[in-house]
Length: 354
Image (cartoon, rainbow, N blue to C red):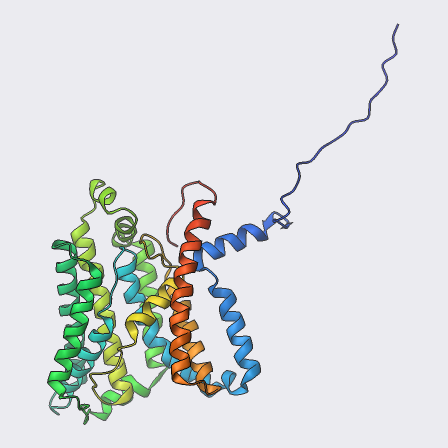
């Protein structure tokens, strides 16, 4: 009769991935990867930027400068959302600077007559965005012309019309009721333009996440042919988004007119490049079909904080231009890297926006 001896029970555990550190089921590596795919390196850059400028120049975090930053970011923030309307469909808007300039001039011309109400001036300025967006949409969606060339042309034409209307001289004599109400007033402790920007951000979030148009926009940007075969009206989707994006640019023109108390043909010309940088560095893919409203805002905030901080520490304007150009190149590199990381991530189906 044999005697069976108990053998020790050996329990083995799978080797943990050294890149992952888990605490109660939480994976820091997974969070970092998801954050990078969504926003790139933007969160890190924002933190470094704020800390660096706060240490270098105490005025950077003063209450007066914070209010100034809030006003500045409201303009670029709205423009960046308008640029997102184009980018998610795999198109570009290089006409937003010209739209801002022409809407400013038209708004000021209407208001300077003296018998026009502020509402008439605002509607006239917004009508410029409606016209420019319609032209862009028709040429891009129906005639299938490159958005780069179309918007470059319409933007240049808009600036030319603005210069022709003004002769290169700012239009002044705007009603004080308009400039006070929409240029320097405060709403719930926020500058009026910042309050409008928050409304635009909320509206864009609802559009891209909770509406059929938003879902179709990402579908068209992801694969236009597949979206068409799935029953999406591609032409209608492009038209609606491009008109909306250009109207947002016109809204910025009206707000800037109220802020500077004049209509000028040379304002906003920096917006095409800045809005693309803000959108791309904020995680909106250049090849379409992906992006977050929060990312576009964070990208705009980063650019404004960078410019504001460099102004405070007296960095020369040409150095700022060099840094802005380098930032564009960095944004393109990060966009390409994000694409590679996304392709090597979990292959499970996922939503391309949140």
